[in-house]
Amino acid sequence: MPTHKFIVIDDDSNGHPLDLFCVPKHYEDDLECILVPAGLINDRIERLARDILRDFSHEAIVALCVLKGGYKFFTDLLDKIKTLNRNNEESVPMSVDFIRLKSYVNDASGSKIEVIGGDNLENLCGKNVLVVEDIIDTGKTMTKLLDLLNHVNPKCVKVASLLVKRTPLGIGYRPDYIGFEVPNKFVVGYALDYNEYFRDLNHICVINENGKKKYAVKK
Ligand code: IMP
Image 1 (cartoon, helix red, strand yellow):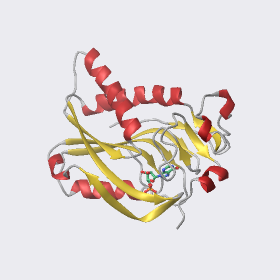
Image 2: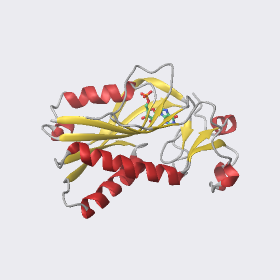
Image 3: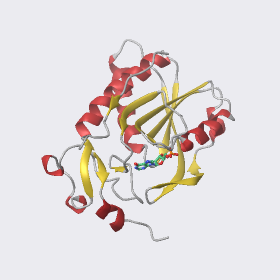
Image 4: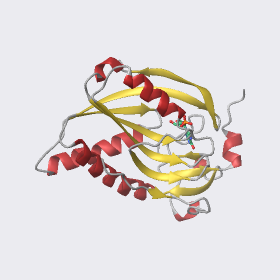
């Protein structure tokens, strides 16, 4: 398979000021900047859909959504794949599956990663699985999920992650498809949350100290 390119957002990128785009009033004081505007996310996903369909070369795919953070990327990616399927000479049958994992409290990656819901993974035996995730940070969550998946013997497993964070804590894992590589900052919006807040924000933004404090979970 060819190595796919991705968009790199540099460490010195200041993103875009909030007042150049529309953000919900209730989050205006909680964000540092808009890192990836919704329109750019949409355009990038269109291309990811094309790359994915090409690589799977007309074999049926089970798209596995990693909840909750992956749900926006999942629905938008599948919409683009469905559009291609409707308009191309050849098409790829798709089905969907869901898994729910949890690893974060406040802005720290938890050491324990739990599967807290979803379909029976046994159903994926012998299938071509496309895992759809919001963000790879250290890579521990995805490595753990891939381990679980390998136990049920799928035909093949590929991973699409909208974001990959540049972090010194990374364990070296890289997904097959990447939307954007982002600086080591906590990002929210487009279904990515901070303690369940900010999923109702359509741009990917950097949270500020005020937001972290306001929505912190008291431990
Ligand atoms: P990892 O195991 O460190 O790679 O963490 C991956 C998971 O942590 C993702 O599936 C997200 O749910 C969550 N996560 C990591 N970084 C962020 C972030 O910047 N914003 C929101 N969630 C994040």
